[in-house]
Length: 345
View 1: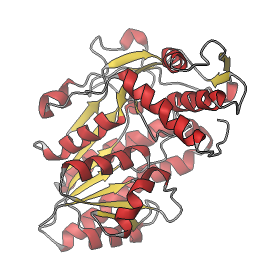
View 2 (view 1 turned 90 degrees about the horizontal axis):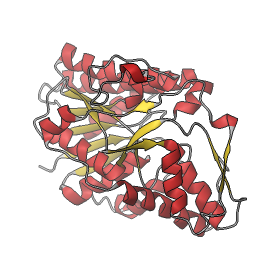
View 3 (view 1 turned 180 degrees about the horizontal axis):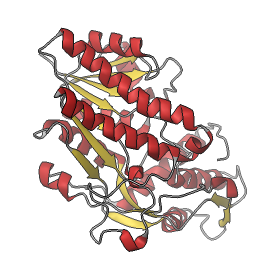
View 4 (view 1 turned 180 degrees about the vertical axis):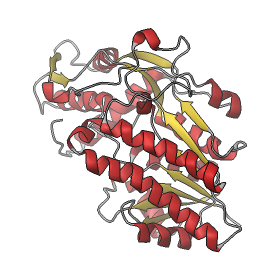
């Protein structure tokens, strides 16, 4: 019988790339949970397959509605669950902390309770579950306390935003359900990952979008920025989803938790300079700090130690940083070239 995967957040950057990966590399059917109002831009290339019921299925459910999650779980009974849906923008969490906490913590609890409910009525049902937390759980680590090999799994949590606090709850819930109910749940803390379809509220993507708009003459040649001194380690989203697939298929161990990240580390300002260097307008572009883009507190030393996950699965990132950034910039060039309109953010 054909296996089934369920992806919460399929319409996001990571969820849509994960769907692409599974369609290309497995024979699984892919069910994507989305809300009726979810934008479909990132999955527009999948809509014809969904209309033809060709291995792609969109299912209505909402993390804030328990009944919809139970119904989806009963109808699909997926073999694998990738829980990616979240209020995922740290900056927004400062102005919408309650929504962030509700969606990310209680939403995860509702999803796992839905699986547990279905499993209680079908003792043979035990899906492998990936709960996606975030590297933001580690928060603001002083340079003097940062491990020489990078942030490892046992580093203490010190969340620096309501979003990060919500992901601490998400992380702990995944481990709790594995330990308390013997559910095969594994948790990941993915460090910065990007590429085509990255939301324009994230630093490297807003840089790329602004550069593409400058090239088209839509805005003055000024890139507005926040904190350029934060240190980040970048992974390509296409490497990230391959890691998620390996997480659930290579000897999955219930209750385990892993850091996952790329191999290229630099300051946010260096990322901006890299993107600008790809532009024919590079000699004309200026940089301006926008106070609205600064966080009250920043997780500014996001450098991972991923040995635990690599040793367990054999995963390694393979897509070079330069290709990731080229592809991100070209993604925005293509959208802006089609005449799409965007907020200047």
